[in-house]
Image (cartoon, rainbow, N blue to C red):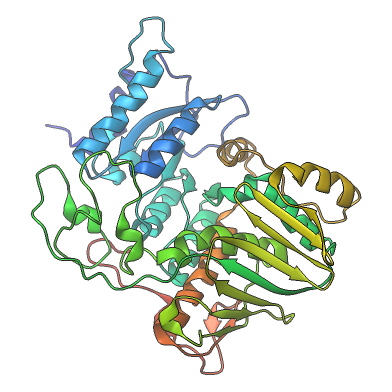
Length: 438
């Protein structure tokens, strides 16, 4: 009898061709031992995962065994990237040991893969992460975590139930300027916080793109996955190996606009600085001008107000000073005196103002390495799934305020709207059959 593809992948012959180059992997679902190689699969080979793949391959003790994409060209390009990388590290100067898949489920069924890196469009994150957790894979998943508040909680539950390590790709938590900014806030250096401005782009909108003719080589139905059926448009999935971030993130069916794109980074830092990684806002106030795409306010239990503003970055306002932080940017004031005006002064500020700090935040200088270290130690990484879930919940609440233009009251512990201010139907998104979370 002929074996199916999935039966073949379960067999020992599926990994035999790679044996000369691979250290013996752990048995199925066992924990990684400190000196074991971590074998990885990469799902969604667009611009972001091109970067992640390159970074992970360079880290000691890892190996890329498989790539997956619904576009034939991107899939084959990624496979060649892996083989070219390892070819330069073998005596023979050649390497053929990376499998390329169209269906991520085939990748997940491989017993020799320990961890996966997911960098697909946002609407696929929840389904893939839940399936990966059930397959006993550890997970590095790009931000924003997912498309709805209910999806986020299901991801947390799947990770916890299956005892997986999960790192959200909110890599600003592994940058010194953001950590120091948050430690200044958490240690009261600028006094009690009164307001936080989170400056990112606006909300997403319903997709209204016209259909286009599509050349062969893209599994369009699988690209859409749980999202509604619609004709192909190249703005959503440009064919081949592209060097830009496609526009799918602007449309509600696939992303959350700037609010979830950059917001997943900056609202995350705002929550970190406020010490709200396990909570969230209590009241969400709509913008006075929702068409402007900014102005939504989030009010926390302690009275601190977080404002969605224009621009890019995070600013904490305290009674005695303020801190403004962005990538490569760090500015710090006490009263009217500016103490620091650039990132190079971060270390000096840390030594002068935080030498005896009572609050010390998670310290990491490499977000990917932090994930791998935690895979080996079986501890929670810098941006654990719960943190990613809380951050994306804030982002979704902001987007819901723009969509419905009404006051909402929120219980962050039950993750429910309360006092008739909000609708439970807003907590989830529909999933197209058969791409459902069973």
